[in-house]
Length: 420
Image 1 (cartoon, rainbow, N blue to C red):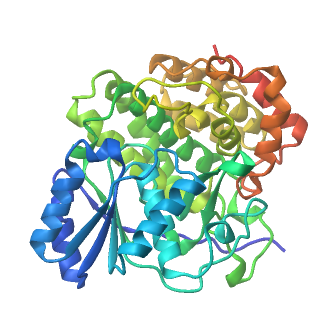
Image 2 (image 1 turned 135 degrees about the vertical axis):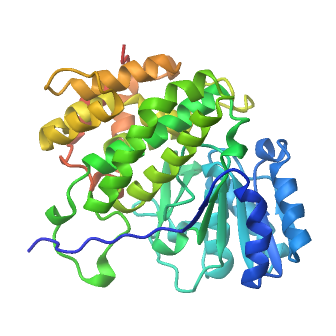
C-alpha cells in the first residue's frame, strides 16, 4: 500500500527591509524575559547582532550573546555552544542571527538545553542514535544574514562529526524555528563567493525538492512514523518553482553587483521560498554527495571565507556534483527536469538529459564557482571514499527519484571532476 498523505510545516514568517528591528517587540510580546542570541564572529563584526541585541534589550528581555558559532559546525563546536548555554541559562527564547551555521548551532543548543542526553544521541543513523526529542523546545527566532541555506525554515541541523570524518545532521520537526525573520538589508555584506555558494544551495534546494520522489510513491506510514522529508508534493512544488523563477533573474546580478537592492531582495525571497519547499519535500543526491565532499576537504580555501582552515562551503559542495546528478535522475521525471531547466533559463533548448546539467554548468561558470571536484582538490583516487560517505546519507538518498547504487554514485563523482 502506498502513501496517501503528505505533510507540510513552516515557521511564522516576517519578511522585508527592517524586519530584524522588530524582533525585540515580538519577543517581549511573547513574554520572554531571558534571551540567548547566537551568532558567529564574522557576522558579529558586521554589527547586526549587537544592534539586534540592543533592540531586544530595549524592549525588555535580558540578552546573553554567544558569538562563537563555527562556520560549518562540527560536533565539537556545537558541544561548546551547548556548554555555554547550559552554564549561562536558563533562557526563555533563542535568537539566531547569521547564516545556516549560526542557525543550526542555535537549533542544537535549543535541543540539548531542553532535552536529556548528548549530541550524538540525536544525530541521524548510522552516524548517531537517531533519538527523538522527548521535551518541548524553546521558541527560536531565526534571522538569516545569508541568502542560501533556508535553515530558518527547516527541521534540520547539519554538522561535521570530526572523528568519523562525515557531515551529517539531526532532523526532527521540533527543530524548525518558531519564527523566521528575513531582512534583506542584512545580506548586503555578503562577499561575491559567499553569495555564489549560498545561492547554489538555494538552487539545489529548489531543484532537488522539485525532482524528489513523489510523496505517493513511498510506502504508507502510520502518523508517528512520518518523517519531515515526505517527498515532492503539490505545495512544495509551488515554492520550488517560484524560487527558481526568482533565481533566473536575480542570481547573476546579486553575485556581480552585490549593491543591487532588487537582486538582493529576490535572492532573500528565493532562499526562503526554497526552504519552505525542501524543508518538507526533502533533498537527494547532490546534498548527499555534498556531505563527504565538505567533510573530507584537505587544502581548499575559497575567497570570501575564513582562511584559517580548509573548507568547502556547503552550497559549493552541493553544486559540484549537481549537473551529473541531475543527468542521473533525468529518466525518473524528464518533464520535471525540462521544466526546471526552462524556469532557470527560458532560452534553454533541447529535450534530452543534458539540458538541465548544461543550464547548471553555465550558471556555475558565470558566477565564478570552481569548475568541478578536481579544482577543489579531489581526484580519481578519492572516488571510493566519497561514495562511501554518500552512502551514509540514507535519509537523503531515500528521497531520490532513482535509487542510486554505489556504481551510479561513482559515475556521478567521476563525471563531476570537471563540469566544463
